[in-house]
Structure formats: structure tokens, C-alpha cells
Image 1 (cartoon, helix red, strand yellow):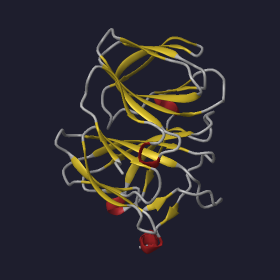
Image 2: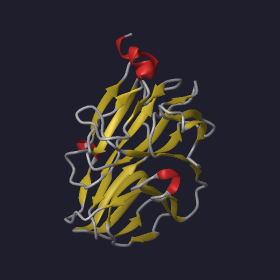
Image 3: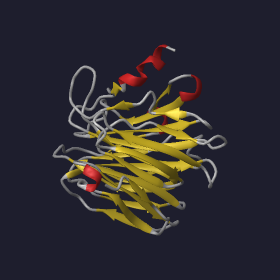
Length: 263
């Protein structure tokens, strides 16, 4: 099973994951790279789409938006994100005002409505963890944003720190402690040669992967625990995209490592 997808920047849209890949049921993910003045048409379909601006400035028309300016975003580590949420059967035209990169996050949906812009000042920010497993979490598409399956945020992880730690999973609906949500991570680093280590493993050992992640890598997480660490000297960014029927920030901690919460 292939859980890692590498992307070399190239013009236009690159599809990096679709339902069925690595056991994913819902999520589709791709990256859109546009030079200044270039355009891309997003075709309507039976899916909801979140457009997360990674770099530059774009103008979006469609879904009730008329050349809505999104951005600028110059620094993933310093600038909060801009996100546009497009409901089912909503297409749009995306035009780059500056050279731009946009993450295209999709899941099946029948929920109709108008497009919604989540600007930086509406992004929720919290600090999670402590000691060498602390990180900033930015939440753009949570349970308060109308969507059927998508649940999306970003993490900023300081040099040498762990994230998604203690190891947690969200692979079955067992409210109020856990929900079934598959996930995708997309990575960037503050220096081009930055890297980290991603684990994906299950209680029964049917998945036990250790993956070196580098700039612009994407990791598919259909189930299991999924802690990640960045190398000393390199701060790490990742976009996390989850999808599931119960859109909540709930997970179960690996019992072998639960003690760390009280340490």
C-alpha cells in the first residue's frame, strides 16, 4: 500500500489523491500552481471543495462570489490561511493575481448553498501539547462551517518537535471519545532540505509504516495512529484534511503512550 505521494511543482492542477487510494473512502486532494494572470476552472460536481491558499493572491468567481480576492499569503509559517468553501454542484474560476499555489481538498457531498470565505481573522488558533510535542493548530473548516464531510486545519511544528502526539487515531465512531475520520497531510518546511518522520500504525499491526517526509510530500492516512516529528533545525508546516460523517475534533490516544499526558 502506498501512503506517500511526492509532488514536483508544475503548472496547472495536479491530482495527488482520490477515493480508493491507500484505502481512502472519501478524500480527494490536489495542488493548483498558477503563474500571474493564469486561470483555472473548477468544474461543478457531487462534491464539496475547500480551496486553501498556500501562496500568493487569487481572485475567485462562482458559487455566489464575483472576483473575490483571496490573499495575499507570503509565508506559511507567519501568515494565517485564506480558505474558500464551495458546496456541492458549485464550480468556480480561479485567477492568479500573483504567482499562486492553492490546495484543492474535496469529498463527496449533496449539501448545496453559497460559497463561503474563511479569512485569516476567522481562523481559530490554539497551542496543543507541551515540552517537545507542542505545536500551533489553525482550524479553518470545523463543525461550525457548513460542510458534509470535510474538516480542515493546519499545524506549525517547531524545530525538533513532535505533532499528532501522543499518538492518536480517529478510525471508528465511538462518541463521545472518537470519531471515524480519514486524513491527508501535506508538508512544507521552512528550509528546502527540511525533513521529518511520519509513523502510521494500527493496534493489530496490519499497518506499521515509517516514512521520511520532505518538502511538498503528501501522506494518506486511512486509519491508525499517525504521529510525526520534524528534524532539529527545521520547522514543519502541514495542512491536514479530514473527512467523516461526525465532524468533530475527537480521537483515541494509544494506551501505551497515554501516560505522557500526565507527565
